[in-house]
Image (spheres, rainbow, N blue to C red):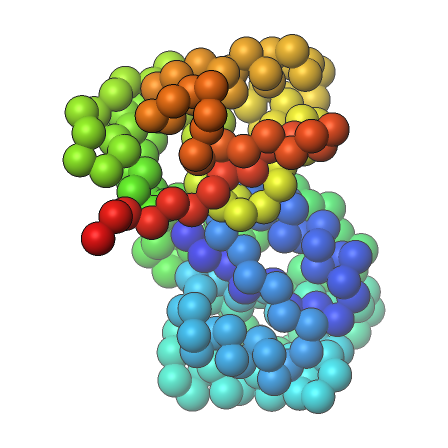
Length: 228
């Protein structure tokens, strides 16, 4: 499931992106209205989180352009008390709104609600990155044309987290929070889980191709395209 986050406050945009990736979304970021429309056209997101006060092209104009061509769910970000902006945005076709400041849990709940109303599942059961294929429901992974391998619940959860954040470095702390919860794991448990997962997906676990160690930080999944 893809999300486009549009806000010129880069700190807030990064926080929203981190929250949504934690929930299994692939996230694109835009910091002005023009780049938001380009990403919407190129990437076809399933949901858009849209700030109204944007440079170059404001959120109202972005919403109007998108609604002229598609029914992509849109959640507006507004400043508390700006009732006229809320009414105007909803009249233009936005599906819901969240007023700043807001909690990440509130935003996620609003996104899940608009996706349900739009008839979309939150996260697809089968994910693919390069020649890695993961069926989260069955907890099975296949590398290229190799035999399907069964994963444990934690291995499947970790691999899914890597796949929806492909190319991004995931810190040990972020992995702990996602897999076990903030109080449920430690760095040694992360190392052990990564080691077990590598044994199941890497041709040579001692020289990994897919899950790279980023020294002192964490790990990153590399998109290895299938051999032609």
